[in-house]
Image (cartoon, rainbow, N blue to C red; front, side, top):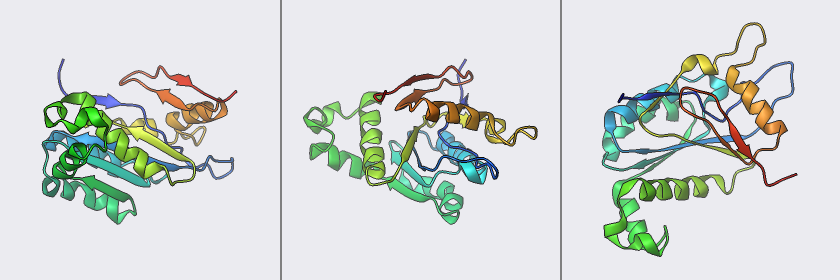
Length: 192
């Protein structure tokens, strides 16, 4: 079966008025390789509840021109989200300059998902390194966000997502990996 998946993984926390909340800077990033799916994902991100809206967004353009993706960013920038839109030419120049390692300085190696992930990780790291308590969420541009996952449940005032995030924070997880359509979480921590 082809087509966009529905993503249930994000690192954000619905703020709860009468319970202590975790404070962090949410940085979301993806590589835009298809205009239609990238714009749909940006629309999903823009429609998240305010407590789940990222504070920073990194979009690395691959096969999508920056001018064509900019309209999808307007509602996010209006909401105060800091946006880093990385053009294809900047990526190519940085790769040739060796910024992603010697291996990718050869233009013949600047193809495929491994290269695109390396580029995205590089720019997300640069965005997050100076922030206090950054949380980075890496998406694929062909996923869609299931809005019900981010909405607070009337009985508890918490979203399903915030419950999972609170558990991960309590475990002091350094890395959490969610799956599309199912919530099996694997976590790893370097701290004991």
